[in-house]
Figure 1 (tube, helix red, strand yellow):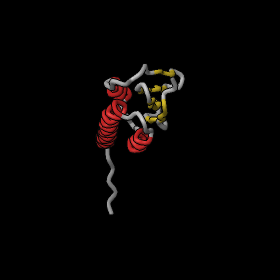
Figure 2 (figure 1 turned 90 degrees about the horizontal axis):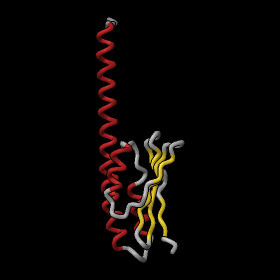
Figure 3 (figure 1 turned 180 degrees about the vertical axis):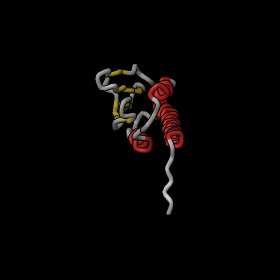
Figure 4 (figure 1 turned 30 degrees about the horizontal axis):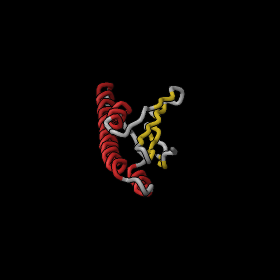
Length: 130
C-alpha cells in the first residue's frame, strides 16, 4: 500500500474544511435550540394566560423542553423577550449566567442560562406568593 503525503496546502485545505463543517454543525445546533425555545415560550404564554389551578402542566412543559443546549445567547434573549409574561432578566457577570423569569399573577416559571457553557439549568415553576 502506498502512503500519501499531503503538502502544506493540502493540510490547510483539510483543516479549513473541518473548521467549516464544525461551524455549520454549531450553527445548526443553535438554530434547533432557538426553535425549541420559541416553541417553549409560545406554549408557556398560553399556559400562563389560562392555567390558574394546576402546576402540573408547567412541570410537564419544562420536562418536554429542557435542557436548552447550544443556543446563541443573544438570539435566546430575543425569543424570551417576546413573551408577554417576561419579567426583568437578571445577569450575573461573574458566572456569565442569565436568570429568566416569566410570571402571571398566579404562577412563576423560570430558568437560568449559562452563556459560556451554552446550557440551561433545570427550570423551576411554582405559585406566586401574594
